[in-house]
Length: 185
Image (cartoon, rainbow, N blue to C red; front, side, top):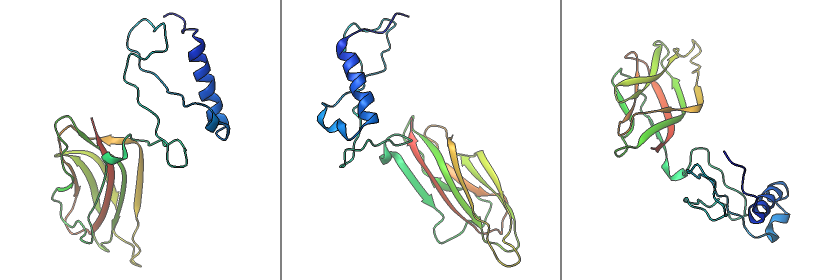
C-alpha cells in the first residue's frame, strides 16, 4: 500500500477538522470541511476529489454534531404490551417484518412479571427461532415486582423480512414488556 497523498488541500482540511473538534468555539469562522472516505480501489487517489458517495455530517440548530448510534433515527421503532400483560405461552408480534432485505434489530428490553404466583421465562423470537431468553420470577410475597431492563451494546439481529415476536415460557404469568430497536439491512 502506498503512502497517503501529500496534497496541501487534504492536509489543510484534516487540520481544520482536527481543530474544529478541539475548539468548537473557533470553528464558526472556518469554512465547513467534508470528510471523504470509503475509497474502494487499491490505488489511492492523486487528488482530493472524491470518487465515492459523500455523506455530509448532520448538525442540529445549535451547530452541534449529531451522532446517532444506529444510523437514521427514522428507522427506530418501539413496541409494548400496553395495558394488557402477556399471560400465555403463545408467540405475540412485537414488530412486523421489514421489506425484503430489511432486518429487525433489538437494542433495549424492559420487562416485568406482575404475577404473584407464576414465574416464567421471557423470549424474543426471530420468527419462530428464539434469539434471547431470560427468567422472570414471580413478584415477591409483598407484591413487589422486579423490573428487568436490558440495554444491548450489540443489538439482537433478526433475519431479513421476518417478524420479531415475544413469548412467555409458561401460561399464567402477567408480563408487561417494551421492546425497542431499529430496522436496517
